Image (cartoon, rainbow, N blue to C red):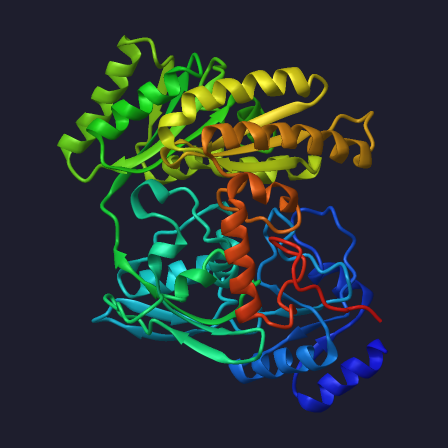
Length: 469
């Protein structure tokens, strides 16, 4: 049955590259969660929009689910193909298609890596500001699918703010050209924003027009060591009041220990329980002096134990590694991850509640925190001990995550800040969205994907198709 289906796809698209070797199925069928056994039908690698439309129409006829694939750096199982789906990898649709200097819009294919987009913007003397540590692996299509944020959200916002237009293929194979790069467009619903953050469940992004901005002013990086959790928001308030911030991140002593073991250099002689790293404009002596004044004020008030301000681009990169290297340093431990958000004003009380919960519920596991204090997004990584099996570890983490979800509901937060719902967080969607909201979401899914073929089983279990044998 599977072979006959693929034969019919090949007959329809004889030039389409299809992969079905076991190693390819394993490689393309999973993302960074590593929790599900990949079992896709095959891997397709289209080159054109017409290819994608033809694949979707074939999938409708054959009753085969489609899982879109970019860099597969996701952490919620959104790119997992474990039930005989066809993976549609966009890695060959990876070109810059157009640049308009007047509009400051660059149009790209979805498989373009974030790092390459940033390089293309720089080549035109402009800047694409969405940024995170996986820039060399993640694709623009994946960034759009999760409305990725990263380290500079405090100034520039999420991916959503930079999408001028999208071309998408719906679950019926239709091509929609959304917004066309307009700044003002009040002609009905802006469907573009439905696709951003939809995790490939409403349509396949085949082209994206992205806004660019001026290159940032010269900046410095400052890392501060803090004696207590309560000091985090005091330092943030002081930095936000006196500096023009691009980023404000925090991490714990446990996070720092893992990064240092992974090869980073420690800028401090003594260990503190909390650290913040902030990037700020430092184009003139006045801005540079303001940073020193912030440090002195925070130190005088006892909010800071120690600090380092970068004196060169190389030192700034070295300091940023302390934060950006955390995920990579933890990867060998296969951590269970939570990616949550609350309003910035709720962070102090929420963090206190969360810390008490983890100390009580995770007595045998190391919990590593870090995140984006400036936009209310916290990342929680739970590390398994050697005596616990993988299965038992997941069960225990799921139990505690249910408690975390209830706490988030009390604080009006979200179980997913920027990683998406995917497979990992299906059961927690109702804690973030009301029954009425979910009903509307299901209705939108039914319109744009009437046959239920687009990333079936992700976000919520709706429209599953027979994608087996």
